[in-house]
Length: 247
Image 1 (tube, rainbow, N blue to C red):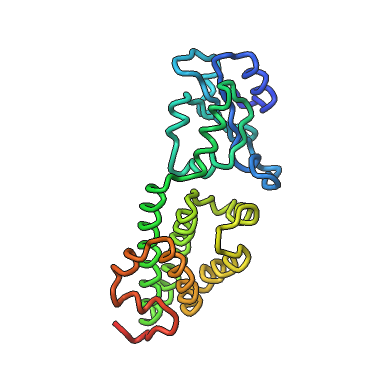
Image 2 (tube, helix red, strand yellow):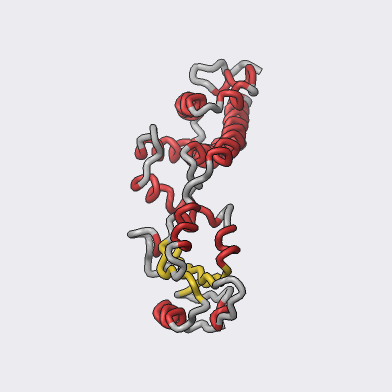
């Protein structure tokens, strides 16, 4: 482990190592204006398949300046889940494969249609479930549970809205940055973020249900009506002007 290794030194070592076929920078330094004096550089060093690289020993290196993951092209291509958003906005610093590294990074930001539809259905159901629980807990006087469920529902909602646009949800740190530069179709960024912030902060039931009305319209337009209809009469409690004494 080399705690004093700098980013400039890493670039120099990569320049002299033909086994390295790619360098990808993610995190705050890949999001214009987001890096602070405390931000390190998170990088993927990508090796050719079967290559014997001197830089392999840097895998897992962490310091105040650098966080390094060393991987192969195939492993890099398979990265998903939590890493998907980070890679979708990453900067390709080195690409010695005639654009293949850039193509892999570009593909991380776009789900295929079938994957997006399945993901949206799951997140829509999770959002409805937390909303329903929040409204019922508020009705029953359980304010803490109602507030916690409301906050949970906003995470599920964000997953849903980004899935409907076939994109990975950004980390909370980058949510405003992302939406200001790449708005969700059909949603004005500032009002959406304001509503989410108020619901997380207050758990307000009327505000939750008014937002749900907009989400329901968007979900049905996207072909997700079946997921909503599976809720049956319980769906009525989530809508504006619902009878809170019901059920």
